[in-house]
Image (cartoon, rainbow, N blue to C red):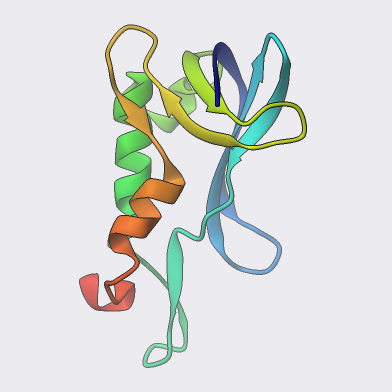
Length: 122
């Protein structure tokens, strides 16, 4: 695992072309750059016959903002972060605050929520 400082150069929070709410942070760092995210922030509700928000999705957004140290999604672009990644051609495992020992990982949070039925948490 390599840890470098990086800059968030773009963000996406929205509905992807297949109808799933998702978020990405595109981050550049000395050895390259990569997008971080791509997890589903919503789930399918058979009862409502539509996609609905989840506690996991809300928690992701809150933790990203807190980790980076901003109050609004729009303030993420241009912010500096620490990046833990697996190297050239790999993935960003987690992002961290430049000053404080705060880290966020979609994968780790997803594992915490994996035993829960997200559609029941609304």
